[in-house]
Length: 108
Image (cartoon, rainbow, N blue to C red; front, top):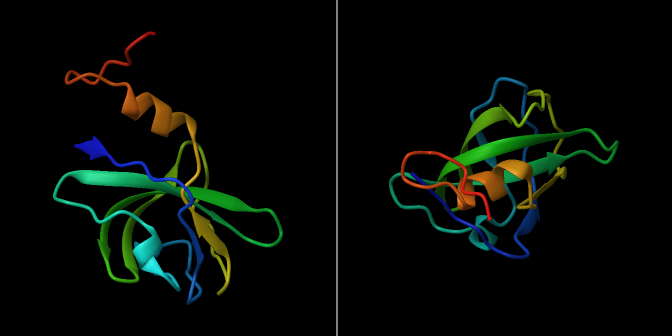
């Protein structure tokens, strides 16, 4: 599995999601990377209240993203339409980007 990184990928949810949904629809999925089998990226979903969740995106089909909820010690929470969805630098991004084939974090 390979992490995919991209600068300035930001959009909004086009529909509300519950805390158990495993796919989300955004207003512009084209801002995110296309993913091949085994590729993924991390995305932060943030409400206007400041509540947020980090999710792992494992597939993108136009504006629909398949996600694994509650990454990096965040909780799966509901979000309303127009919540921000964007790729941000997170600790797991950095660890995954520098991990070797055995899954060990490489020390620089």
